[in-house]
Image 1 (cartoon, rainbow, N blue to C red):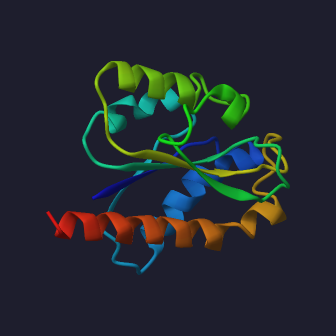
Image 2: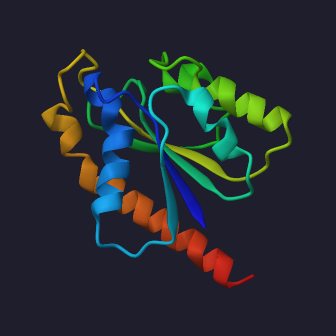
Length: 156
C-alpha cells in the first residue's frame, strides 16, 4: 500500500501544499489503497514513516527553477534528493537529510517527491492561484501511483 505524506507549513503560503493535498485526499470519495499522513512542517517527523517497507510519496513545495505551479515527480532512484534538487528547506531538517538518515538505517523502500514550484511562501498568504490550479494534477498523480502500487501488490 502506498503511503502519501504531506509536508509543509500551511502558514507559509504555497509551502502548505502538502497538508492541503492530504486534507483533500481525506475528503475525496476515491477508494484508493493509500495511507495518509500530514507531517506538518518538520521533515524530521517523517523519519518513522520512512522506516517501513511501504512505498512513499511525499508532497511538498520545492524550488526547482521552474514556473510557479509546475508539478514534478522526483524519484529517489533517479536522484539523491540533494538540497540542490529541492531548494532551501523551510523545515527544520531538509528532506534530503532525513532521507540520508533513513538510508543509513537500511531503508530500501521506494520514495518519490511530488514537488510543486511555489509562487509565494509569505506568512499568512494562503496558496497562490497558480499553485491552487496544480491541485487536480497532484491528485491525479497520487491516484496513478496508488493504482500502480496496488497492481504490484496484487501480483505478489
